[in-house]
Length: 227
Length: 222
Image 1 (cartoon, rainbow over the protein chains, first blue to last red):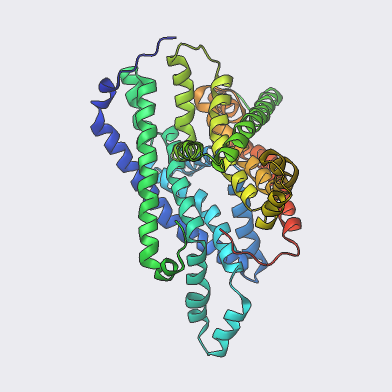
Image 2 (cartoon, rainbow over the protein chains, first blue to last red):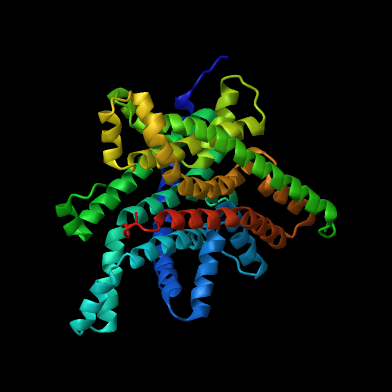
């Protein structure tokens, strides 16, 4: 048992690590925004009276939530290729992550919608608000406010899950690490550094979402809702 | 290319599926044992234990499983242990699962109604007695649906063990694909197989949740 760690040999590659971390954040940002939109649409679709749309949305959510992201990424990767469409690894990664996180977002949003008391909607109808106004002010915004903590932890998990995109060589942090460790033969040190970087990224993201929450939902601050 | 998908390929994939289940069970048992300790440590009366376990959870939950797997694989090798992919994957998944189950179970233990804790204290039970005779039996009931739900995550996440060369379902699919080169069909079969393993558990977890939720007020989610 002799463990000798040589961090300087790996740390001199810091520009690559930084570039990888930046690309990880970029991937996560794209997939978060697109996945939030897709998930909200799917949640709304599941709640409609049209059985076909509701069924399709449910099938999407259950299929994605019960299969591994790694398999989904390969299916998107080879699926697009077999359709004759050529995209960069980054685009494929964004597409796969969006499809993945959309399903989880849909479930969270559905819980938010279901928690809106019927009386609120009836009251809004009584005040003669239009359907659109009711949807926006009485249903969507309060639902988002209510599930905001769950949504944001889902997006942090998404950022961590984006490491799987290294398997189709999207050049995010883990892919960079794979390259550096095969180049320096310092695998353990490389992955320790990468783990630290991911922890930092997730702390940064959580702090960012917390700050955003203060701006978006000033009422929560008064209620003293914890992070 | 190398011909068509035949019964031998399917047998090979079936074997991979069995390894996926085996690895999931190993991760559940290992992660469950460590996770239980973590859950108790998180609510320990000793501040240092609480902080140490909180840091552990934050570190594991802030690191992707893929990186933990690489760390396990190369880390065990770095300290001179020759490890099989099964041991590396089992150890890494145990760490990963323990952090999440620990947090889930801590929440369940803490959600046992406060008067139960106080009543147990009022009966002059020792801390161990309070836990084993009053709190844990109730916490286990609360913990069952989310634990079954988390088993779905475990099964899905074992697919990442393929990258350290463990031949579970995903890896066996990649191996079959290397000889046939029909990626879309093969990964579709793999996806269906994972779905067949996970969906019953998801349904079971939902049903448990609904049964427990009956008669309770509509609690806010999240």
